[in-house]
Image 1 (cartoon, helix red, strand yellow):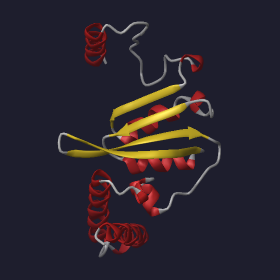
Image 2 (image 1 turned 30 degrees about the vertical axis):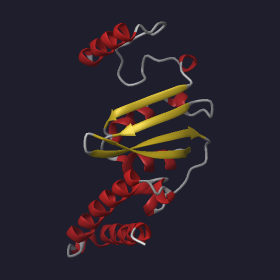
Image 3 (image 1 turned 135 degrees about the vertical axis):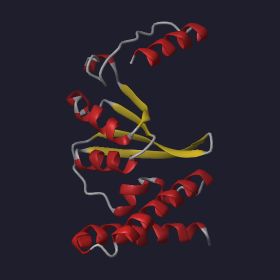
Amino acid sequence: SEGPLLSARENIKKSKAQNIKLRLSDGLEKILPCEADVIVVAGMGGDLIRDIISRAEWLKSPDKLLILQPMTSADALRVYLYENGFFIQKESPIEDSGRVYTVITARFDGKKRKPTSAETFIGKLTNDNSCAAERYIKLQYSRVKNCAESLKSVERKAEEYLFWNSAEKELKEIIDKFDT
């Protein structure tokens, strides 16, 4: 939108950066495939990031590196990436202003995958022993546990409950490793 575009223009001016073109665009709509090798989509929900990626078919190339930082719904973004042939190379937890997020680095390799519960909710952070990773994993565990609890006694949601309950158990095992 106009506000972030103006802010970007001012930041470019302040930093005296050169050779930068700004565009007002709906996602990547006005970006040509030959104009970008690395695409950063950050500071918005995972659902919106997923929608932006899904509308840019030219990202389905191993030459394009995606750096994605969802503020919410990282699980929905991960599932989309896995199921649509993107390989998540790395995830890095970051903390900012008391909140913890993840930065996902991915490339298209064409292999569709079915993520495990842990991959859905914490991605590649399973073996990350940093404080930020521990905090992120514990937050996701709490979220998953609350969802499982709320579905536990809803008979028509039995199948959904099994998914959330299984995810809760898998994440609990990972959390227990931090506490040892």
